[in-house]
Image 1 (cartoon, rainbow, N blue to C red):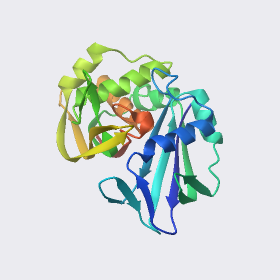
Image 2 (image 1 turned 90 degrees about the vertical axis):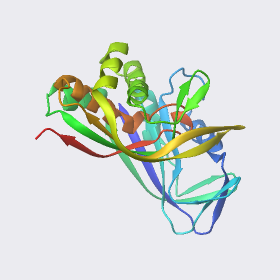
Image 3 (image 1 turned 180 degrees about the horizontal axis):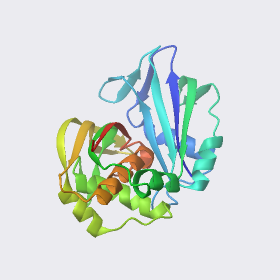
Image 4 (image 1 turned 90 degrees about the horizontal axis):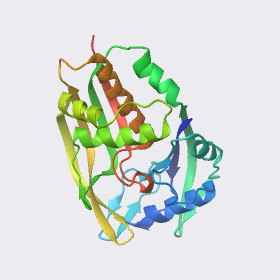
Length: 258
């Protein structure tokens, strides 16, 4: 079972939060879920933080009244998905002295088997272009450093690692990543660098739009596997620290063979 739960929030007066608020918020949510943070080698949840237009100062973020914001919490396996489905935030979300009104909630549920059959086993026309939007800073851990660049090999590796860990269908390993890295390239992008504060560390990431395009001679089956992993990113996020608010990913369009 997979779930992507999104709450729409607003506020009646300006709300100021420290830039490191995300850690406190995710701790609060995990406490309500009954999931112990740090107990999983590969986290079974991903989290977006509060996404939307806000003003930024050196140490704080300002959320404006009557604007709308989104908070997403995703489950990657049966147990975490069930507790997220049962999570009730009520009509108010309060933490660090801030208060947001909960306007609505939307749940998107799926399963690994359904995703696999829809995008691979049923042999749909191959996808030739993927247009992605990275909503929160996205980065990749490289030898204790962070690389804030949308490299296809690193994106597909992060999605594949989570898929192989949680899904009943094994897709492949380094050979698959090597093939996808040669067959799929960044076609265009409009990204900028943002840092996110976690504890006392400032971690660089990129946000914005990235378009991936497959080469003309890509194997149709592997093009569909690439699409499957891209669709899975809606739930698992991309790159490092997705449990803490980094790497929240959405898909704007996919273009198939006609």
